Length: 192
Image (cartoon, rainbow, N blue to C red; front, side, top):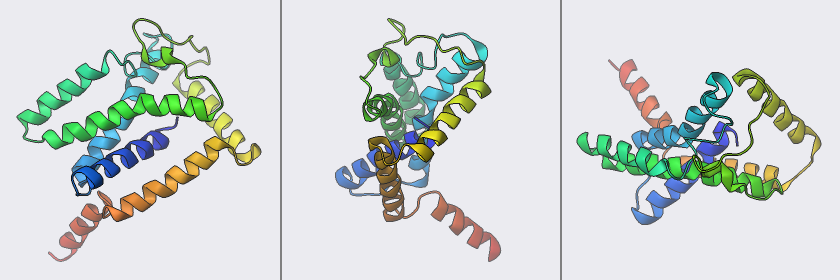
């Protein structure tokens, strides 16, 4: 999945959770925690495999169900020390949503779910040999654009479109976190 898809999926999950369970919308800080958590598995694994060559593929340490609890506990410990426990919850939900979204993406593409993407260090998917980080990005990006332009309406494209609309609607319903805060800050700066 692409970074914006992971962010959208995580934001929908977090927004629905906070609105239904806690009857409150995500704050700007919670939204930032969701953004960081939703991207971290790829920010760990893709450079380790595609740039540095420490791991074989783009699914290893960051996507591992064995590593995730330690990452979430470390974030929780830092958040508790700062008096921001709610941010650790936002981060953890987003971080854990990442590998789930990757597996759902496999299903939507008509493939079987490859559990090797989350079972590092026991097993990992086969290594890719598309070159460095930019080579991988270009290959996947042009393949994605080609699919969008030539495949018509697929389950994956329909899901992505609905997810995009749901995220926009939820974000507006939530009061446009981050953007609303930035707007208020700009207005306050002007009135000084």
